[in-house]
Amino acid sequence: LESLDHLITLHRRKCEETKKLKKYMLQKMFPQNGSKVPEIRFKGFTDDWEQRKLGESLSFLKDGTHGTHADADGGPLLLSAKNIKDGTIKWDETDRRISQEEFEKIHANFSLKTGDILLTIVGSIGEIAILKESEGLTFQRSVAFLRPKEDILSEFLCTEIQTPIFQKELESRKSTSAQPGIYLGDLAEIPVKYTISLDEQNKIGEYFLKLDHLITLHQNKCEELKKIKKYMLQNMFV
Image (tube, rainbow, N blue to C red):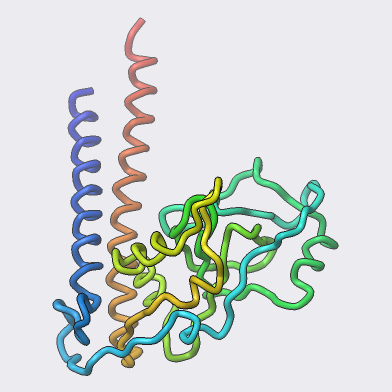
């Protein structure tokens, strides 16, 4: 049991260290305070970064359904902001489902695509995930759909949205109603800085994906060890 406690502490510490590293690199690998280049950069890249409004960087910007939809068994998922956490879409069998007919009404004029960025804009604002599978799910109005233009990679933009600068912009623009939210028009006005090199964008995106993977790995290991400890406490004593 002491060994289990040691391992739990080890993975928890590794998780926190990786989170701190990610926070530090989000500040250093994107230009700060009017600068045109980041403080830390991959070798071989020297060009100035450019800036434009988020809306100008997207080919598609929309929020989820505003309508009311009847629940149905076995139909497509109707998820919300609470389902986007830690860079992933999390759902289980307790989440809402709607009929295929209702789903097709929602998507009569648009469809979600693999690579679209999902951003929570009502309640818990600023959580993000990249859509890996677009079949059989849609979202309520608490989630915005962002589709970058061809000169910006989803992984790169997704990373920039997590930077303290972008998150501060979200915070400053949210409404102060009973349930805080941000309007799409205000979201589109947020400035973003980007390198014109897709290769550099790709390297940055991959770097932060690796950090996220390490964070998730240590979180999962910690939870597994806690379950083992609980089981052993129940079964090693009379």
